[in-house]
Amino acid sequence: MNQDHAERDPAERITAAEKAQEVAVRRELEEYYRAGRPPWDTGVTPPELVARVEGPAALPPGRALELGCGTGTNAVYLARHGWRVTAVDLVASAVQRARVKAEAAGVDIAFHHGDATRLDAGCAPGPFTLFFDLSCFCGIPPHRRDAYAAVLSQRAAPGAELLMFGYGPGALDDVFSGVTADELRDRFAGWDLADVTPGTNPVPTFWFTLRRRAHD
Image (tube, rainbow, N blue to C red; front, side, top):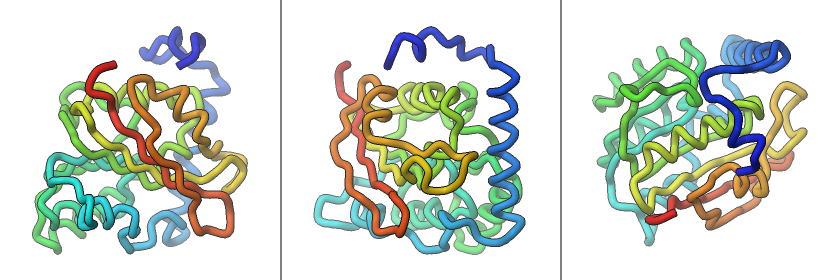
């Protein structure tokens, strides 16, 4: 984590331009849901997550935190496979739909409407052994991304895994900055970037796997 990132006061010393960027991101996300299904909310659990839950090297069920849960498809999938799931999303209508989906599936999930970079100590306290992010981080304004990494680090059990899907820079539109492997290495102190696999989308996308070190 570079020095400029480390010196930022997480207690909200942000510029007017940064605040405007946060508002623009929220409005853009809300518009995606108003207009129909966002490209990241397909209603189908991605095979990359299925492999970690059901594959030959499957993780044992534990506690999972989904960042940017959308309408709850993947949170419900995890809960059905024995995970204790907490899920958060910035868009209220998405969370409402996720709660309905979980109720219909008969699973108990702790949903929260809020900003994944501003979870207070009483919300999703952890520790979690799995974090799942389907294009949440890549849409977060750069000035809030260290706070996101801190949220996960504070709640991660030793050896916890973060499975993240992200769009590359310029893959969506000017509002969303995208993400690179180098940025994750820089921001996630105490984590190892274990794998980077290109996605199959027509625009640049990646699956990233990060693991929390047992000892920093």
